[in-house]
Image 1 (cartoon, rainbow, N blue to C red):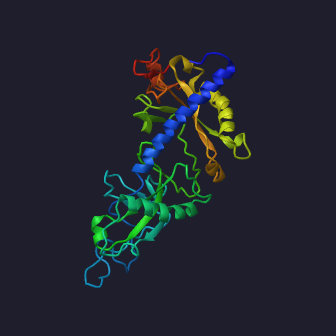
Image 2 (spheres, rainbow, N blue to C red):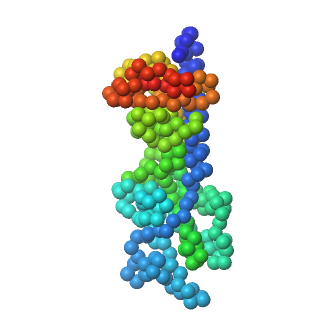
Image 3 (cartoon, one colour):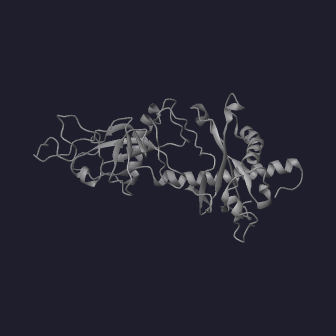
Length: 334
């Protein structure tokens, strides 16, 4: 795929790496606009002996009706569910699989008294931005990485609880994949590295030229992650994007050789690419990036689907050996 002098080859690699990075950004933007907030009944931690269980009725309000007791989850609580509508939501130990970690509990009753209708989607987004982002930043030991793998979200009362007067909102963090699928967490995230990286061997789906959720590498995908690289091994201070690109151009090529056993990726129109980090990410300790393998369409308009792993010992790689790119721009791995 690369022709001409070494300098021309390097420029081509950097150009296509940037194109692949754009595809990742588009996928992340789709996730951000589709999975920021949701409502569901909430199964809290066990209440104190003298406190009624939520749902059983709390103290009567002025007109004598019973209002469900307030949610009891607190900052640091981990929340899990398995149902598609999250109706089986419950708090669990943070070393158990979960999807959401509470960073703050806020009360919106001042802005939304009992007689008021619930906020619409745009209003909920404003509440998350204005009331949940700050607590999330304080919750993370090094501060929140605005470009990291964790995103600010919230659990708000469902329709029945809202009508009953519930106004507690649980701010928190979760990790959506680029396509919006929430990833299981198995530990407290307060001190975790926030670099938006995936484990070596992970493949991310291709969804209409944008990057999607993790998928088996034997299926059509956008990227296969071939390495996790620490920028701080080379740089003591934040490196510019050009500095990152130049260094990773060599490092990721070497990692590709290690991962594939020296296979000729160019022969199948595959490209070694990588991520870069923003300065805001660097400042909170997010120094890790992925090296990855993908492909671009012949007309350069976006990412092309790839089928099969390029890993040296991968069965899917062996099965696809000898495949060639089809008319739609699909690349077969060797």
